Length: 143
Image 1: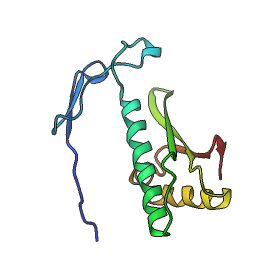
Image 2: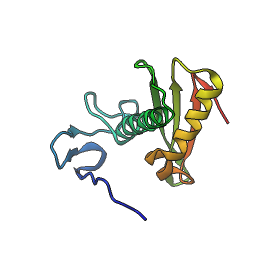
Image 3: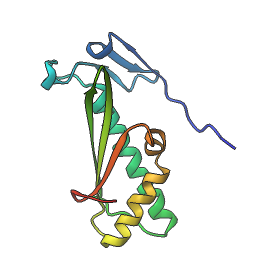
Image 4: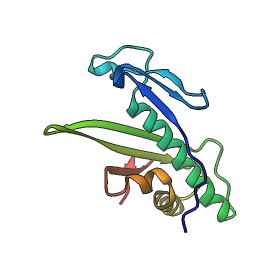
């Protein structure tokens, strides 16, 4: 049975060259096309926001897995998320790379934890089958 835990609300005006604001007011940002595509400096874009959300959500999944196993993640553990916007024909799409460095676990345990996190992370669940997501550990792609 599905149990709703939280709903976030945000609104946008002006598309990629506009402004976004969350209902809490914590996010209140100018938006722009990425600077490399002719956008302005000092503004964010949807891909950057998605990468930040995915990285933090994936790291939380790793924290949950470690806690359930009676382990603790090293405080220096990192999850780097790169989100790519691409064009295919007339449509556009996204792909992501998650690069995890758990610092203190052996390779086998790290791989198990990353694969498990990919099964439970809400971003991973939500994107599964809809966008390519590559998992890496310390820069090396895993299967």
